[in-house]
Amino acid sequence: MKRILILNTGGTFSSRPSDAGLTPSISGPEIVDIAGRISDDIELSAEDFCSLDSANILPEDWISLAERIGSAIDEFDGFVIIHGTDTMSYTSSMLSFMLRGIQVPVVLTGSQMPLGMPMSDALMNLHTAVWMAASGTPGVYVAFGHKIMLGCRTSKVRTVSFNAFESINYPYAGEVNAFGLQVYIDRDRYTGGLELCTDYSERIAVLKLFPGMNPSIFNNLHAHGVEGVYIEGFGLGGVPFLRKDFTAEIRKASELGMPILVGSQCRYEGSDLSVYETGRRILECGGIPVYDMTEEAVVTKLMWCLGQTKDIDDIRRLFATDLAGEISLKQ
Image 1 (spheres, rainbow, N blue to C red):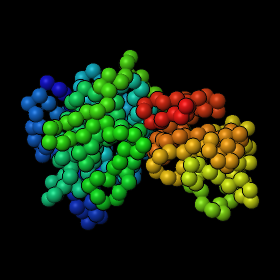
Image 2: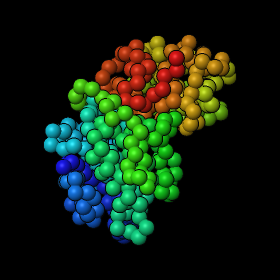
Image 3: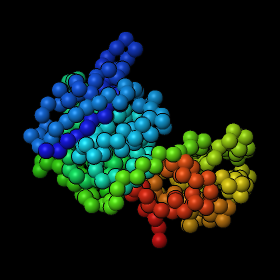
Image 4: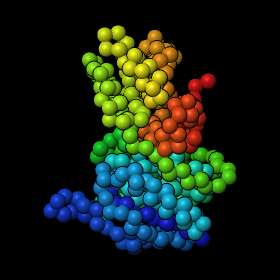
């Protein structure tokens, strides 16, 4: 018998209509009742972790989720987290770093329509998540639209479609088809045991460049105590270096010990700072490449790294290390 704990955080999945719009109000035990018996070999338990629109999920909630999973790791064979879709990829990415070496599945899911509404995708997503949580495949995943995706490779790419999430620059970890749950990822990918690493810093900034953007914005970042910056550049990761010279600001910040990460605004195929002059200037000035990571993974990994160390060389090394499948390093 596989024991699975469902942690309900709210979101659309757990919402009901109200005068204020859709509001999370369906409890964990109600969800288990509605889901029914999924299998004779699976026993479901449920807890109400919180009841929030995922826009209101904060980093301290990530810590609490990681700690709750850590405290129950010996009691359950897997975990399902019901979560709003809007920030689910941030939560799944951060849990991938906080739950180092976890040896059971942690599967996040949600829905585009509330549970119980006609034609809702909630029940199928829940069943997919439960089956993955019972599969014995360690790691953090997102289950959505019949697909299983590595948590640190997942992004929400559509606002209303049932296939709202994609696995970015990485194969699906599994799927549900006419033959049931198919798992494509190595079931023995982690060795050792769980190490909770929940320290983080939220003193970061994300800059999405646009033509003509003033690089003096870096002065404001320094003044407000920002500890690290992620720049979403153009194409393969380019930034201006002539009339609006961002590379000079990257150099200044790097010399002051502030890590400046540089990637691409393009969602697919990643960045490569070795190709063009602009990218090579970024590297020469101390910019840190993020290769093919998702924006959500870069943001959460930067927050997590700054919780482990403030040393820019250590952070550079951590971003050149694949910790949870979040990055494909170019040789």
